[in-house]
Length: 129
Image (cartoon, rainbow, N blue to C red; front, side, top):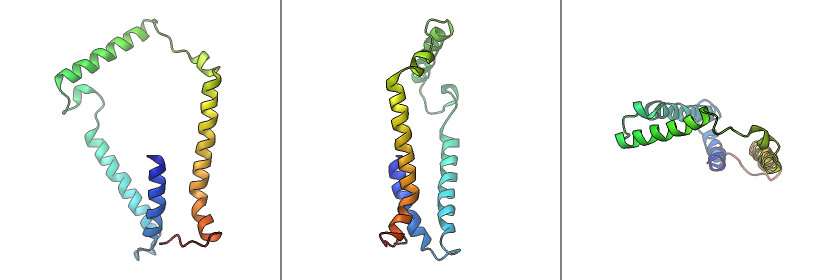
Protein backbone atom coordinates (compact mmCIF):
# COMPACT_ATOMS: atom_id res chain seq x y z
CA UNK A 1 0.00 0.00 0.00
CA UNK A 2 2.72 2.48 0.89
CA UNK A 3 4.69 1.99 -2.32
CA UNK A 4 1.60 2.25 -4.52
CA UNK A 5 0.50 5.32 -2.56
CA UNK A 6 3.88 6.96 -3.09
CA UNK A 7 3.83 6.24 -6.83
CA UNK A 8 0.25 7.48 -7.21
CA UNK A 9 0.81 10.62 -5.13
CA UNK A 10 3.94 11.57 -7.07
CA UNK A 11 2.13 11.10 -10.38
CA UNK A 12 -0.94 13.00 -9.15
CA UNK A 13 1.16 15.83 -7.75
CA UNK A 14 2.58 16.57 -11.18
CA UNK A 15 -0.91 16.65 -12.66
CA UNK A 16 -2.30 18.80 -9.86
CA UNK A 17 0.46 21.37 -10.40
CA UNK A 18 -0.99 22.04 -13.86
CA UNK A 19 -4.40 23.04 -12.49
CA UNK A 20 -4.94 26.76 -13.06
CA UNK A 21 -6.32 27.42 -9.60
CA UNK A 22 -4.18 29.27 -7.07
CA UNK A 23 -1.02 28.79 -9.21
CA UNK A 24 -1.45 25.00 -9.28
CA UNK A 25 0.90 23.76 -6.57
CA UNK A 26 -1.46 24.44 -3.59
CA UNK A 27 -3.91 22.00 -5.21
CA UNK A 28 -1.59 19.20 -4.08
CA UNK A 29 -2.23 20.15 -0.46
CA UNK A 30 -5.96 20.74 -1.00
CA UNK A 31 -6.39 17.36 -2.69
CA UNK A 32 -4.45 15.28 -0.19
CA UNK A 33 -5.90 17.25 2.73
CA UNK A 34 -9.37 16.48 1.38
CA UNK A 35 -8.48 12.81 1.02
CA UNK A 36 -7.25 12.79 4.62
CA UNK A 37 -10.47 14.43 5.83
CA UNK A 38 -12.52 11.86 3.90
CA UNK A 39 -10.48 9.00 5.42
CA UNK A 40 -10.99 10.51 8.89
CA UNK A 41 -14.76 10.70 8.40
CA UNK A 42 -14.97 7.13 7.12
CA UNK A 43 -12.83 5.88 10.01
CA UNK A 44 -14.87 7.82 12.56
CA UNK A 45 -18.20 6.39 11.41
CA UNK A 46 -17.16 2.85 10.39
CA UNK A 47 -14.65 1.79 13.06
CA UNK A 48 -15.66 0.98 16.63
CA UNK A 49 -13.67 0.64 19.85
CA UNK A 50 -14.98 -2.77 20.83
CA UNK A 51 -17.34 -5.52 19.64
CA UNK A 52 -20.07 -4.48 22.10
CA UNK A 53 -20.70 -1.17 20.32
CA UNK A 54 -20.24 -2.42 16.74
CA UNK A 55 -23.63 -2.39 14.95
CA UNK A 56 -22.75 -4.81 12.12
CA UNK A 57 -21.33 -7.71 14.12
CA UNK A 58 -23.45 -10.73 14.98
CA UNK A 59 -23.98 -11.90 18.54
CA UNK A 60 -22.08 -15.10 17.76
CA UNK A 61 -19.07 -13.16 16.46
CA UNK A 62 -19.14 -10.82 19.44
CA UNK A 63 -19.19 -13.73 21.91
CA UNK A 64 -16.33 -15.48 20.10
CA UNK A 65 -14.16 -12.35 20.18
CA UNK A 66 -14.92 -11.62 23.83
CA UNK A 67 -14.30 -15.23 24.93
CA UNK A 68 -11.01 -15.47 23.02
CA UNK A 69 -9.87 -12.12 24.40
CA UNK A 70 -10.82 -13.15 27.96
CA UNK A 71 -8.90 -16.43 27.64
CA UNK A 72 -5.76 -14.84 26.23
CA UNK A 73 -5.70 -11.95 28.69
CA UNK A 74 -6.50 -14.22 31.67
CA UNK A 75 -3.44 -16.37 30.94
CA UNK A 76 -1.25 -13.32 30.55
CA UNK A 77 -2.56 -11.63 33.72
CA UNK A 78 -2.15 -14.81 35.78
CA UNK A 79 1.54 -14.84 34.90
CA UNK A 80 1.22 -18.05 32.89
CA UNK A 81 2.68 -16.39 29.85
CA UNK A 82 5.29 -13.69 30.17
CA UNK A 83 6.32 -11.63 27.21
CA UNK A 84 9.99 -12.41 26.41
CA UNK A 85 11.30 -8.84 26.06
CA UNK A 86 14.87 -9.76 26.98
CA UNK A 87 15.18 -12.67 24.55
CA UNK A 88 13.64 -10.59 21.75
CA UNK A 89 16.08 -7.73 22.41
CA UNK A 90 19.01 -10.20 22.28
CA UNK A 91 17.80 -11.98 19.14
CA UNK A 92 20.12 -11.58 16.14
CA UNK A 93 17.32 -12.23 13.60
CA UNK A 94 15.22 -9.48 15.19
CA UNK A 95 18.13 -7.04 14.92
CA UNK A 96 18.69 -8.11 11.31
CA UNK A 97 15.06 -7.32 10.53
CA UNK A 98 15.25 -3.95 12.32
CA UNK A 99 18.41 -2.95 10.43
CA UNK A 100 17.07 -4.17 7.08
CA UNK A 101 13.76 -2.34 7.57
CA UNK A 102 15.53 0.86 8.64
CA UNK A 103 17.74 0.77 5.54
CA UNK A 104 14.74 0.02 3.33
CA UNK A 105 12.71 2.89 4.81
CA UNK A 106 15.59 5.35 4.54
CA UNK A 107 16.19 4.37 0.90
CA UNK A 108 12.50 4.53 -0.01
CA UNK A 109 11.96 7.95 1.53
CA UNK A 110 15.20 9.33 0.09
CA UNK A 111 14.29 8.12 -3.39
CA UNK A 112 10.69 9.24 -3.00
CA UNK A 113 11.65 12.77 -2.07
CA UNK A 114 14.65 13.14 -4.40
CA UNK A 115 13.43 11.33 -7.52
CA UNK A 116 11.23 14.13 -8.93
CA UNK A 117 14.09 16.62 -8.61
CA UNK A 118 16.54 14.17 -10.20
CA UNK A 119 14.14 13.41 -13.05
CA UNK A 120 13.55 17.10 -13.74
CA UNK A 121 17.08 18.47 -13.37
CA UNK A 122 19.29 15.59 -14.52
CA UNK A 123 17.11 13.58 -16.89
CA UNK A 124 15.20 16.67 -18.12
CA UNK A 125 11.80 15.03 -17.70
CA UNK A 126 8.76 17.24 -17.41
CA UNK A 127 7.35 16.36 -13.99
CA UNK A 128 4.23 18.45 -14.71
CA UNK A 129 2.88 16.03 -17.32
